[in-house]
Length: 273
Image (cartoon, rainbow, N blue to C red; front, side):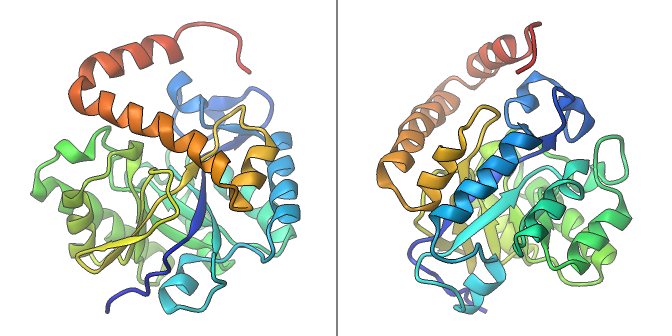
């Protein structure tokens, strides 16, 4: 089935929501991962600001694929499958009557800091979208062989489908490493909607799979930024798009130096904030 392609979709990308400075309590450990983890109070501020800024509640990709959504739908997505997805994130969304998309790293299910099988199943039963974030969260999926790409998607989809008792048809790309081969492999695995980290509202289709961009909310992102992007303020989107293009170019031409510099900066000792 060819997905319905809405020309413009605004999706926000979050990861874990933590209490205080306990960054390693949910999701992947370390300074590089902590950059994307919001303290609970900041996250609740984000939700309040988004609610005040948008004309309709956030929808889900299921509605987008069916063509049953507002002209410019908004969606909230959460990567990695850290334990905070179950609580407090899902609880806070449900207090507003909202549902989110939770993309789970399949081989981390049941390990420290990540969702259990029962929690994954509960999220689905509560009306949230459970999707794949690959099997093992490769740092750079674009360098994987075609066979490995398919296995990353197919293995994760199979396990998640078994857990929730419903077909998993959505996914997100780890580490922003998107390419057309990644999308084709996802489509082969039965994925109908694939979220990237490209800060864009424009959708496309690859192999019958709907490709959607997202705007990343980092640890220090103010609530006003989330609200402006959700409200479709072009200038705020542009401020994410320009640095992303520069970073993408650096990754392409100098991957190892880029990664070394990033690790040195993000993993160096210092106070958490």
